[in-house]
Image (cartoon, rainbow, N blue to C red; front, side):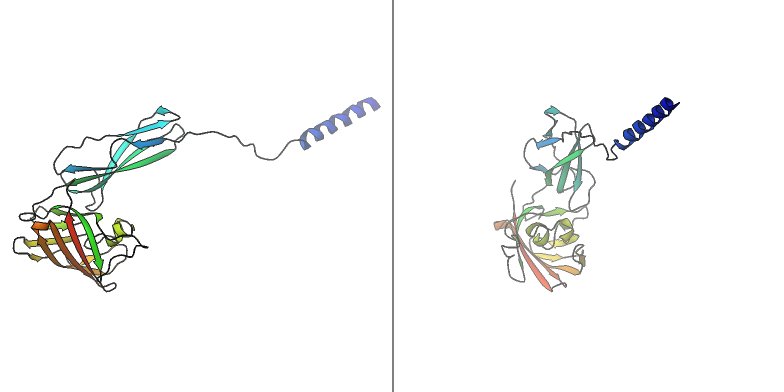
Amino acid sequence: MKNLQIIKMLGVSALILAISSCSLDPVIHSQVTNYPIMSLKGDATIFVPLGGTYNDPGIVATENGAPIPFTSTGAGKYRNGKTLDLNVADEYVQTYKAVNKDGFARTIDRKVIVYKNGDLVNSIEGVYLSTTRRNGSLLPASQGSSVDQKYVYVWKNSNGTYGVSDAFGGWYDIGRKIGVTSATRGGTIAGNIPTNTFTFPGNPLTNVYFGGVAAITGLTVAPASKQLTLSCSWDAGPYTFVSTLTQFQP
């Protein structure tokens, strides 16, 4: 009987020892994932004539050295297009996306500019480098650059008027690199190009990022120098922006 009791006691002791030896710390399983590696084929910025053909160079997408599939989407920056439309002049962002086997995604972007350059006698459409002064001064170098900014766009609307991508000449959007919400979009120009007689039916304008009310106040066309001079006032400062737009030839 005593032997039986001793065996029972040894059994209980072994059980207690086994339980006490179990760790309550979580078990961590490590797993290595190879994120997609992506690079553009061709140029980071591609110009396509309005109504032309875009031959997408594509990208190289790999996972651990092996090619993987990718998708591509496009969106217009200034005219709110949801796809890359070769019949609508605008600056488009083409976004490529690749997903690895564990579901981790990466993206890379290309800029596609659909454009038409007018002769500045019959049409002021075009891609322009913008040098902008606010209340007579250039943007301080410590804040960015307001000289030869790439790019401000003018397109022709279906009713014969013209649209401008940013009535501030890219001061905040391009110069200070704040982004498209800081561009004053919606500017409209109507009138006679040879006589430099214009009206601005799009006024008043709103800046989404900062607020306030803006208005295009003047436009002068100089065909010989391939330049436009665009003026816009804004009550937030108040500020006056004067942009020298020089037509860019891709």
